[in-house]
Figure 1 (cartoon, rainbow, N blue to C red):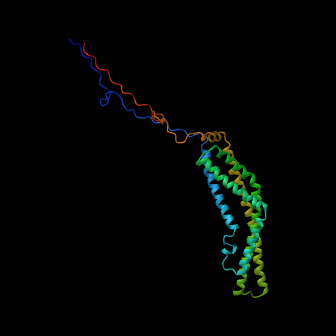
Figure 2: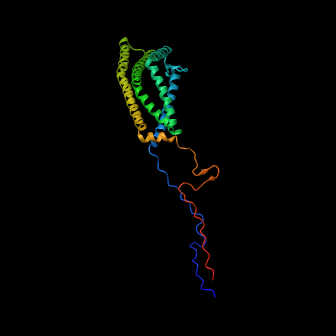
Figure 3: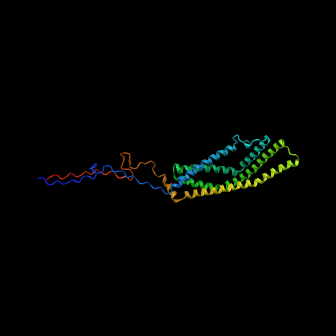
Length: 289
């Protein structure tokens, strides 16, 4: 006679009597940001912007030197032909003076080099990161700092000549306006005419120091800003963490699929996920003896 039958334990989940077949995947935790990766990205964008603006400015300067059909008198209205001709002559004199200075050509060549290096360095920092991008950024900062004396001298000379040119242009415009006023409203006598011309001359001479001082101050502030920006760039690109990141960023395999075997397809679960639990069949109940 058969003995008592044992009571089998009911499965924990009646819908899955053989255990959990498909365990929910455990995704890998979010990878922390690599140390030294922020500075190259930020400076890469800044260098691309500065390089693009530099190239645009150079193209505009070349177009101005070549004429382009525009003259100083193109923006002067209500002037006699003689006054417009004098304006063009003064402006051409300043342009010719600049083109005879070797510092002008050296400064222009350095601006071309700096703009091109900035674009390439920015490209190699943020778009296609490579170790050479950091080296070009350091070279860019050093070139700018070494070129500051040439830039400062040329800028100060340009400010002095521009101030003188503006004063002459204003003198021409005001004298032309006085001449036209004399035609419509003649002075009562020679003394009154001389008084008008003297007031105009004193006003122009009084404005020259202010204009020259404002120009020199703008150049000094610009040089200080250039030194600060490139000093920070040089400091950032020479940090050990940034150097280590840029030296190894090109060694990583881009676009690799984790766990991929060309002959077997995808092997294994995604990173951080555990394989699904194998089916655990329950042992059959004891047979009667």
